[in-house]
Image 1: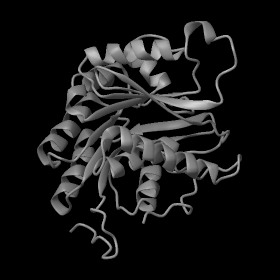
Image 2 (image 1 turned 90 degrees about the horizontal axis):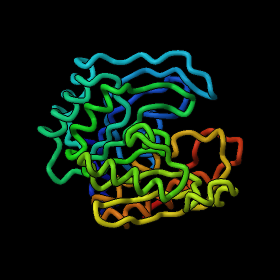
Image 3 (image 1 turned 180 degrees about the vertical axis):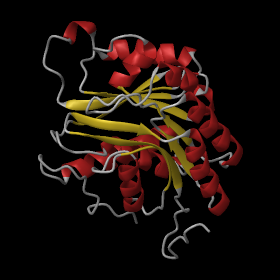
Image 4 (image 1 turned 60 degrees about the vertical axis):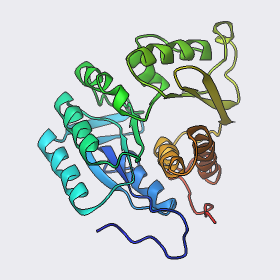
Length: 281
């Protein structure tokens, strides 16, 4: 049975399904998805694709979950619940990619947004997906309502370096040629032009949205939180929450505010984001 929405809330229920890796020792991956969903008043369901023991620049182990086990998790979820959105991140085997998309295509409601967070590697250097998995994802870009990726993964997916926003636009156009649209590239601190790359990076982080026709830029203050984990999960979970009721660009703006404030409310050495500032009326 689905969790019951609070009678005091006028919002529709928020029950996303997150497919990706579990980091047992830190709040990253599925752990961060669960925490952000709770903060946003929802309940998340998960499909674990890997157990990853990695943090602080040290990679100890990456153990992929077999395709049948990933499938069983999602089959169970759809038997007992009605997820309202879905996010796919790192997957370790092309057969798992195929099975996950097949299940979501058959079981996820037609109006439920599906975000592909194309994650090929992790921040500690962990390799999560190989070239065969990238190819399997590329064949299914058009099944996602949004394809999003970090700059380092975008460089692998587009086959080019991205030292500036000029290059980011070219990379997104290459990915759009493969069937991905709309696309969101999480650029971080990135100079605008080729000739700016030798200067200091700007004091803000940028995300670049490409809908197949036009580019839109989203900026937020760069907050120095080197140990903070789970920011991308918080951002994309908030996007799924707001996208149900708002156009994509407006949902992205609200998601940027959510993750920026969750980072602002921690000190520079903290690892866990704080969501206690947040309450929606």
